[in-house]
Length: 290
Image (cartoon, rainbow, N blue to C red; front, side):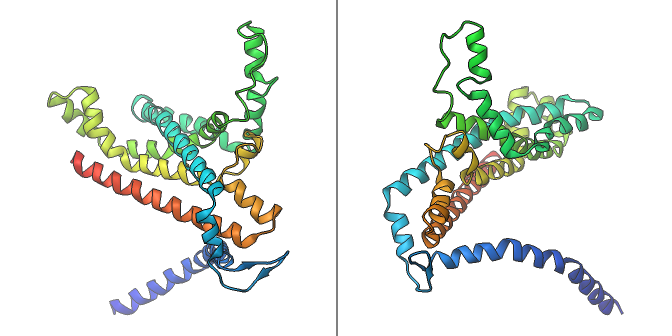
């Protein structure tokens, strides 16, 4: 009698998850498969020829411009991820360990306030802040620190890094906070009872136990950052393109969808490999700490 009941529950569960699963399959898998298929086709004049070829990938792998833009994208994404996580960890640690439980919800509420506005609006606000007549230059000029507005604080890699780090900071704070909240406080007390200093307790206990949250923060920030299109276009002034900007040019401006698709697929493969390497190194780190 138990088996038919389990079968009925299984069918009910499948019926329940089938609509969202099919929806996710259509929304996520279909575009990826379309891009993958396009990457093996031949570009014609304003049309895509149904002729299978590997020339698109050969061009991507051989083009030095692609190498330069990809290296810049990986570097910017890495710096943004490092800056964001290093900045987010102390904030998450403070909220988890220093703030009273009844006030943590208010702090999380304040952290999520940037989500209330459009990402594009936040990017344009940074352009206003860093602009020739922006907040930074106006303040420095008004205080008499500089005689003329600074021109090097906008339309460069540093401005892109600052903007992206600010935009993705909440994405790093929240998973680290969740990981810190799951740590059994008695473990920290045991470490201190055994004579460990607060610093060594943090290094040997808190940090290893918080690593799942740190990993999540790194991946959540790194993956979308390397594919960001808006910030290099607006804050970089279009002068410092990243790989997403190159894909956009191939797809729309040059109407070369096969080459643009090959660039997109190559980028996804590289991001996947980098993420897997990081996960492998993290597992080695956890084994060593144990």
